[in-house]
Amino acid sequence: MKPSDSIDAWVERTIHTEPVFQGKVISLQVDTVELPEGKTATREIVKHPGAAAVMALLDGKLLVVEQFRKPLEKFQVEIPAGKLDPGEDPEAAAARELEEETGYRAEHLQLVSAFYTSPGFADEKLYLYFAERVVPGQSNPDEDEFLQVKAITLEEAEVYLAEGKISDAKTIMALYAWKLYKLTGQIV
Image 1 (cartoon, rainbow, N blue to C red):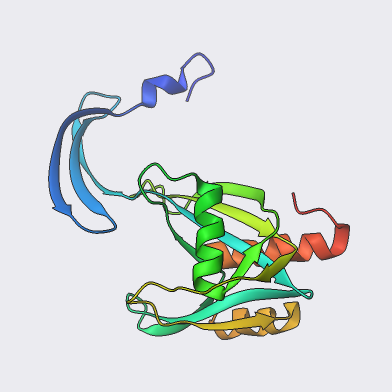
Image 2: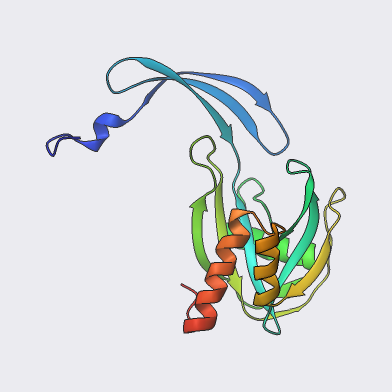
């Protein structure tokens, strides 16, 4: 890019959108786009309503859930998370998911970050929240959700990470935020 060039010149203009699949959680579309030099290309795009996750501490330990993840064909240890309902506030979704999955409620949630999980092909935006104080609530996992709730130390989390039991981006990001918090007392 030359200094005089505008980055706006690189925008891909959508010429046509072809819906391919509409599911319960995601949809898939194929867009035909015009490239900056005038040629066309296709983009396969997964549309997702967004999600919220919580790194919640209970007596200095991180609340996590262990569950089987079919796309990976293995069990994973993850922070509580779930998709946003239509029009749902991300913070409300985070609070809901924490209680549904773990049986704990947050006294206060603080936004750590919001990020796109896979911007090369999906528009999913995930909101990561922090809760330092949690109180007992009422667990109510989805009917197709089978979870084991654990409270783990940072050292246990690092072992899970090394073993590949923790391998999703939101939980890895939460672990780094937790380390920063332990070192500085600041979450963001």
